[in-house]
Amino acid sequence: MTLGLNKRPTYIELLQAFPPRPIKTEEELFATQKIINSLIDSAPLTSDEEDYLNILGTLVYEFEQTQQAVPDIYGVDLLQVLIEENGLLQKDLVPIFKTESIISAILKKRRKLTTRHIEELAEFFHISPAAFFPNSLE
Image (cartoon, rainbow, N blue to C red; front, side, top):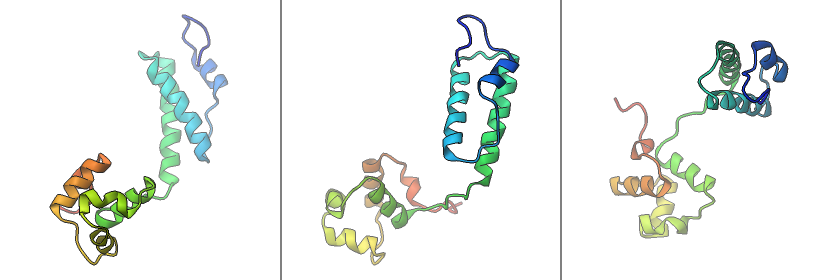
């Protein structure tokens, strides 16, 4: 959002450059987030920019509240998602599980993940081992 080299935009100029509207699509969300990021990157903000940022933040928050919550997944369900998202095959995980038959048994929930499996999977996928456990462990 460049409206002059040294002059910071006024509230009205910000509104004219990107009029805030209720967000209804992912594309509108991304466009709004792009403006938010450009404002944050130009910190310190003027009071006009802070007010405008607050409006955009409220619109993003309201959109996110209308979206269905992503259910918490863990354990084998998480492993299945990670395999799919990364385009992996069972054989790609043989270094962790030693054999494809063990991987198959785990994915079919006939066998449980071991602590060693979880540690190695966490390292492999670059996530915390805690991601494999339900959040209800309190």
